[in-house]
Image (cartoon, rainbow over all chains, first blue to last red):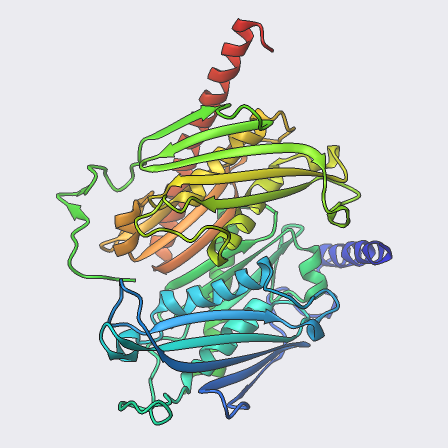
Length: 259
Length: 244
């Protein structure tokens, strides 16, 4: 296909540029794109956030509904994370059931929230063994210019920060708000020709041999990690990526998630 | 993740008698299936995994073909009876993600450029699962690829490290995984110390995580030796019999 040739040329261009110390959009290697975060745009959702990172746009909505707990955790609420790569977000996205990329993204976001224990799951129990709050985190990709994982993870935690528990709608009594216990932030770093680039855009993602998403918490501990892509990485590479990721996460947390 | 009530470490030993840095017993057998081009059976503690490899063969559907190289497909599948509570047959979200990262773990070692437009299909069946299944699967798949005669730069070896009772521990079993605080499966090309898979969930401090990564690296070298031995054993036997 013609597009593949164009894609290869662009990939080479991005690659060569990085070799000479520059990024396609003029950023420094460890510079994040401009982030914007709008909360509560969706009044029907119990919590929502629209995250823009450069031209990437991701809307995350959280809905709560009473449901049955899992048998191995009868007194805990349930988290379910799903991601939809909507066709309007990219000519490469097609309608239909989630593919491996959207499943992977949803599972990374889910892992960060679960690992950090940000959501107080015992507090989402209504009647032990019978009824708990099912917390549905739905990630809607609106526009893809790369680094969807970070945008989705930031949107998810921002949406969760202000959830209103719909007690009244379901005739349940209890607290209306649920303060989070942590603020996990995902930072993705791409490896291109031995260089580490924070927040890769779409073109950079296509030139990257692998990406590592590092999810870290307020105390600097790690609550999730995922390498994706076919490249290999040395131990010292990964350690450096984690350091970069934890540092960037701290900046993002202070700027966008501190109350 | 954290649960109370189960003591996983008694007098410095884990419940199955291992130390914190010990692997479970591993058994690797090459060429266990008749029809596949290459196959391998791996036991890792109570895990039992079979990998079957077909190819390079024609890629279907054709629009998935890559004009420049072969494409690897990887299907990780857990048998319904492989776990305590029956698993509904067929792919689920977990197995889709595991298949993706496992494929990417093997991708860098296969010399795909030799076989443009073809498919190399890897099927991994978990007959019994006891945590660490994706690592057992990758270890089996890597050997099965070699057994299928597919040109490779090296084998890929895989292991997980986790955290139990606040301590970094190698290769968690299912009980430890259920009550553990973190889990990090990795895959590595042992000869060059290059990581090709890295996942983590739960909670690690960065120091624990670094120790875990180093521990996993050492363990991958041990597994690599076992994989190599299994291949040598199989094919030196064939030479003696005059098969090859």
